[in-house]
Length: 149
Image (cartoon, rainbow, N blue to C red; front, side, top):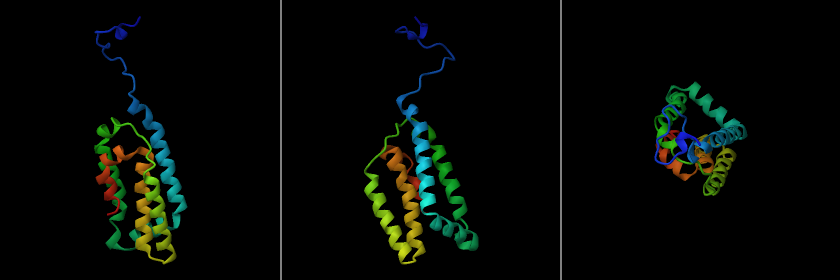
């Protein structure tokens, strides 16, 4: 019988702790989120390319290049809190994603770049609650909202 398995005794110093249920789900959830994000970028590549071209072409929108790194840094600062949560996909985001996808289509057909770019970012943001869940999304709501800047 292991010493750290006996009731009333503390685990041995330096012994690795068993991963919690929340920690166990993160590798798969983050891989799924990365796949979904890449799929959205590929599916809406023309919009993404237009956004990047606009950032590169005009000084007014050049700040677009630093928005994603800042958002990632803001999420990184909350990593301890987020890691303690269990990622659980939420189907509630799917109707919102369908609506935002339709808004993208309207903007694309009407050639309104601002509308389809806003919808593109909305799809990327909505993929977070779809894959990681509403609880995790609440914890990183500001960094996600910052992406619309």
